[in-house]
Length: 317
Ligand SMILES: Cc1cc2nc3c(=O)[nH]c(=O)nc-3n(C[C@H](O)[C@H](O)[C@H](O)COP(=O)(O)OP(=O)(O)OC[C@H]3O[C@@H](n4cnc5c(N)ncnc54)[C@H](O)[C@@H]3O)c2cc1C
Image (cartoon, rainbow, N blue to C red):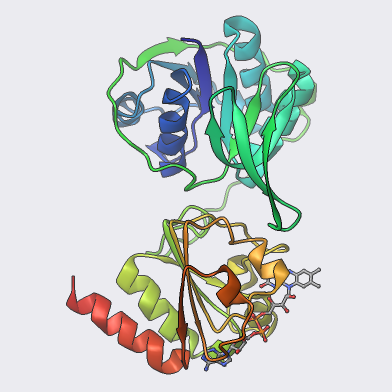
């Protein structure tokens, strides 16, 4: 079977969950080959990639690959596409992943699909478009299919492979060296998972009522090991930081479970969350549009429902 290249996402040498998802997806369509961009690959990382099905691990370990903004990753993938003629290239549909995908498409004269939430035989991607109003199946018709897949689209499943390491040397073009990273500041990270990658997201909206009341939402999120999200009404009111806004002008999430508390379900909010596998809405208005979308709904005051739910979950742990 032909190779499918998977660009590895990692933090401090630890492989991110989305990469394990992509390897799982790649395995259903061909032979996964992980692509590690930059120095710092550890034995643990190699073992993890092999555990999830990477037959080969291409390692471009030079500092250059990570010293310049995204362009080197696109050049690395373009070189591998030219050298190995893979059946497809998969990247995570993160901001960086999508930019790499776009640049790679230009370099290889190929088609690109972004924000896929599924991928099946023949590299047919599932996408939710027009603000989430329409689901389409799309396929690249030119060159090597390049697909950016949203985190949480596939459940990662281990299936051991050989994980043979192959070093790749890359000489960057002048263009790829145009924007150099001069400093890196580590983001303070709380104990909660990253919003766009979390398997469970608990979001609060205007119905939460105040910044202090967001403690109720955080309490439920922590009981579930979830990330916290917010509607724009809540972030605009200053109740929760803007980086946690979910929706058309915020983050797009695709978790296994999305709990919307005190959120009406405006189209712009839906655009960022409606590919969640299961949606639970808690709203005091039985006519709220979010109930049209929800798999389960609770009509009630979130200030009563959410703390009770949190207590019940804690009891079961
Ligand atoms: C160009 C553009 C881009 C936008 N981008 C985004 C975006 O990215 N994300 C986003 O979220 N919005 C976005 N919006 C805004 C969007 O249109 C809505 O205004 C916003 O989503 C509403 O947020 P909300 O549901 O929290 O508030 P509301 O619509 O006011 O709904 C609050 C809900 O809480 C319920 N409620 C109130 N009190 C309680 C209680 N005690 N218990 C239970 N339920 C209660 C109410 O019944 C109501 O349904 C955008 C708008 C525009 C024009």
